[in-house]
Length: 144
Image: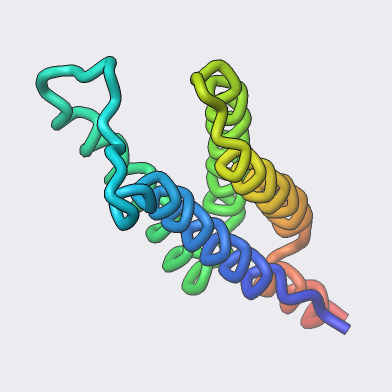
């Protein structure tokens, strides 16, 4: 029985992105109850933050598309590196949010769940990276 690594990876990335969107939504939820979400440490120009957020969302979108259409070893190695990078960013985000006052424990809980999904994504991506490609398996069968 063959393992559908690509299907698992795509599902995990989509779940991660949905959780990330919900993380943002949770941060805005007080607006619907007449509360402010403004931060006291406002910075002037936040365009660079918007570009970073765009990249943070777009890279997994591209990874999903590429995962659906390619099985190349080079991509699988780069993809595994991307998943590790995201896990490191998620861990840093959790740690930094533990120093925010007051601590929003519902956000921390969601981030820990997203971090766990990221670790599972790391594992499945690593397994896919180690797995021989279809072309290689086909060549091995043809050599008999």
